[in-house]
Image (cartoon, rainbow, N blue to C red; front, top):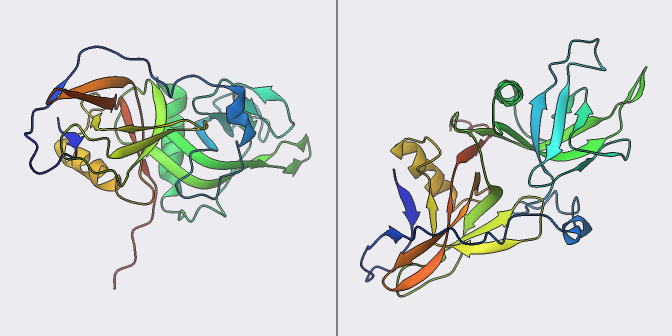
Length: 255
């Protein structure tokens, strides 16, 4: 499979990843992460307010059952609409009014949320916020979606969930840390030289597509673990991709 590597034109392309597994400084959670959580939802390049979403398969009457469970990625708890912290929060419905995702694409997220509920790993991701919503049973809330992402393959996600984009770093020799990764729902970032897509089950064409998206405003979301890149007597950070996620965005209208 392909890897994404940016090196200076004069640098020899010697691609050898070190077999050791270094400490992943983006893993884990701290109380400092909560200080800004939820304040940057509107930021295009932000990394907060991202959640796994999966269908509620319980067999009881709506709206008490049949909606969705939503839980923060990379975090051990989520604060629900009733201000109680739980591993995941139940909402009867998703509110798409702020998502700019058409009704044609919304079922793709629903299908991924069902797959998420019936298989291992994360398959569906939403960005957004909880909001009050009254039902006859009381305030059961809703989740206002601002972004929706679905897994590109059936690969089982493992590791830290990050959002990654290319940066402006330039080097005269490889490896060069030309990608900035932000751990979702934390304040931690790192610059890396490679993404190893080989565990994500992607075709070479799909890998190229994700590499191209690194240069866009949205960047890419994937889960994976830290490794060390060794080239030309130098080292840099890399991250494996155990699963990669595509943002649901409507294609621009034909001219």
